Image (cartoon, rainbow, N blue to C red; front, side):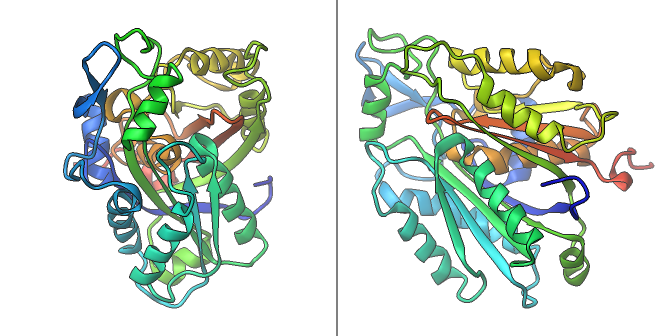
Length: 357
């Protein structure tokens, strides 16, 4: 987005997470500090202990592959579609997924797009997919913003889903020394593998008026960056890619604007904390309290590519429920492959004051 460009709005959202079967339940659970971690029923680490994971408790472990992804994603799409009353409109579809890795089928993107098309025939136009992990949703949102600005679509359904719970994926995580746990190949600074889906419908003012949708927040800015010094290289991580994303988003705001709330995908991995520390040093003059952030991975585990819609919904609900610290929120995410993203949301004027009574 650029200054002077017509704003987009968060119109609706949907979710499936380890701590809730919709976004409202998930947000309430995260706010209360409910933890969705549990021991895997049959996968053990190198110490012989059950792997600690964050699964969606209503999905059996026997459900694997595209079926598991579909059981996470399709109910979340249903929730977001409910806000759109079926009046004809040019609605785009952007789908964020994990990158290729052990346990992830090569046909995942096509299979999921086919499931959505079969469930909602004729509802969506051209579809885009981004297979980049944590920051993939930011790239997907960026394309949706550009398509709306160009007049190619009226609104876009941004979908994101991920699951680390395939046995092959869990073995790969442990083999990469990324699994949080106590075994010899486990990392105290690793992450708890989770799974989730998040969906958000974004559109402009004309779309809102035509469909009589009351928006939940305004999307003020999107920033994208790329980090070439990633985990596994010999160079130290200095946060330049994340700084680029934060600056890209903050640069679209007025100089008097300051970020009140931060939601991010920190998950226990030290490199994520390091890069945010460096990025905050470079941009901290625009953050009211850089160290006061929300990292819901401590409740629902690492949800990978699903993070952006979930984090945006958490920020919006904070506005709606009046427990945020101010009207401007930033969400950011970092992919292991180098992609970085940041989004700024603004509470709408009629939502910034507590309800009377």
